[in-house]
Length: 473
Image (cartoon, rainbow, N blue to C red):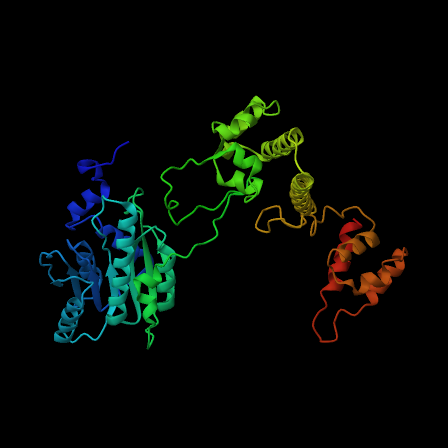
């Protein structure tokens, strides 16, 4: 599928920009960023770098307080926008800084609250050079921001995902308290651009020159390459530094001879570094024609990225057998035999470690499954015992708690005892709960004073007498 051009790139944001009077669809990127981080409503002064054709300047004028000072700077002249100033300067030169300073002094502005940067080089050439030029442009914008940005100010910039991304993030984190990365929906999904939102400028008294030096900041430090672990079930994290330098293809093929005899790389590292193993090299033909190299082995070596752990183990065992077969067929010295035995022991130890690793993973999975099943059983038991009953339902509580029919035609002593256990005054009930003499209970009830110590009528005695008379009908 070829690159989209012309009318194919006119998506909904292009038509919305035309309808609402914005000069570019990029205006909606700034609108979406401001809707999330809210840096424009409180800004009294805004500086937009690389502002042509002026879409971001229009958004800044419309969403800042009335009378805010808005300036747009670009190499290309910007058509006048009501409520904004424009400068035709190169942001990488000292002449631009002087022009911005003169404009600020003439309008009584000491510093900018927000600095915006949406610039990029002319794309269409080599990607590596374009990404480096974009990163350099970002550092130039940061340098201008450190000169004109007020304390606790905000800086918003566009960057390309490249190998310089981490260096830019390091630089910005030294200057701002909060640094966020996002990609608005108005940005095309096919574009490599992302936006960095830097909030609360620290305004340090002195900035180290190396922090804004492009050569020092973007100096490539060789890092240990992360090799895919073929025995891991978890998905590997995506590489956000772009493609590997010098690698123009996504498919890497290793030689079978290197896999069998290489000593500088472990078998697992080899399997994690290549997509396939080839037998077409002349040094690999004896391995291909050997009887241990079955059609199954050849099929497994065609695509290593689709294999599971058992398939990788099968390839590693085949490597050990083929090494032993070739070593036994050749006449070697004692030292060579000792070295081969040591290598075979290492391979056996590797397979043993793989088995141990697999057993540990399986045990962890089983324990997690057992823990989960216990948790589910515990929840079911709680629900069965009513510990999680909804108190707002109609069936909450005991419906027979205050029911007279439940104790009708029952022995009065038993009924009173049951009523007392359900919550009635327990003083008299506890005294006669174990008594079966009905007459003694009635006599004690009649002799009980109908008034409590405080002088108020005791509600327990009349209720008990009424209950006994009702049940004895």
